[in-house]
Image (cartoon, rainbow, N blue to C red; front, top):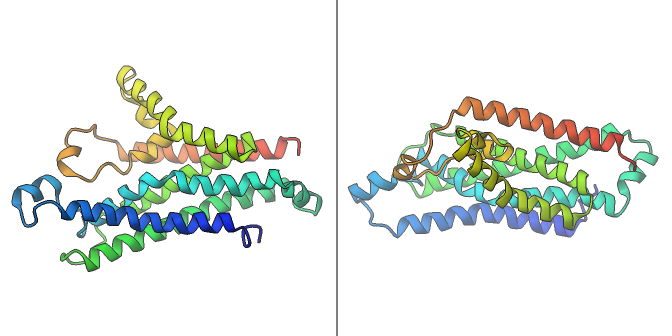
Length: 251
């Protein structure tokens, strides 16, 4: 009910969903510019928009848009503090736990809608552009994408509760997700036996490596079960600290 008439939230949501399709379409145009029916090109690049590769390709292209669902989450939560509606909810009879659980469910809903959009986009490209038969082989990348979006929105929830103001929360979230963690991960990977790959957002990012075959040969191999386990641990930590922060903070 709070976001029902919140125009900014819906405009950003529509732009994000359109961006998922647009990113894949741009990738398709770039891929179409290479020589077609060329055995050497196919060996190097594969056929990224045909089944089963399309599940991986669309998930990877969409993973570059993670800042947008995080932004949706931040403005949803920080508005509560800006307009004191979180305080009014508690006065009206909600418990603090009920309030924070609703915000966690919001993160889950944003992740679900994003994943459905990616699934439909991959399905459409595979069915109408590719000429290979439909298959669910490789659809696990859609599941990895859901985990990735959920991790970013949950991290955004925690940042929102820590900083409360939208400008600061957005700035810190953007800085951390696009620069700081990448720098820390690079240093740890170089000097600490590649443990940087298991940092909070690196864990989910590495679940969807670049889908271009010949480039992947030069990248480090990843232990997917370990990445999934670490991603689950970080999700639990996001929720633990979010709940603790809101239930013990001065409203």
